Length: 100
Image (cartoon, rainbow, N blue to C red):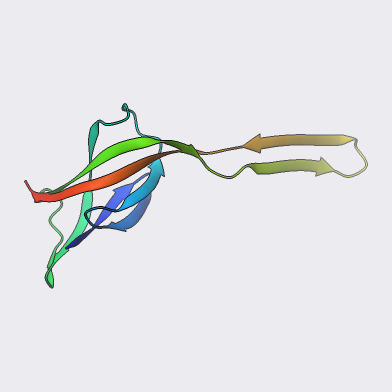
């Protein structure tokens, strides 16, 4: 049994026991969050009703993505600007896919 969940503007395929990184979620380590489902497949039966299943996940901790360096430059005007960004993620472990 697996499900397609929507989190952070992306869709990911998950099953029980998977550990994945999603955009930062409010909550403490060890707390449980529910992820909205898009699709659930159980032994070949496909269910697209979003309110019928709940995907429960446990928060394991926070991580950071790779550093992205941004450089803006305009020729002959002396304009240079350097900027960096590092996305924050939350690691979650899927604990169950249950019917609501």
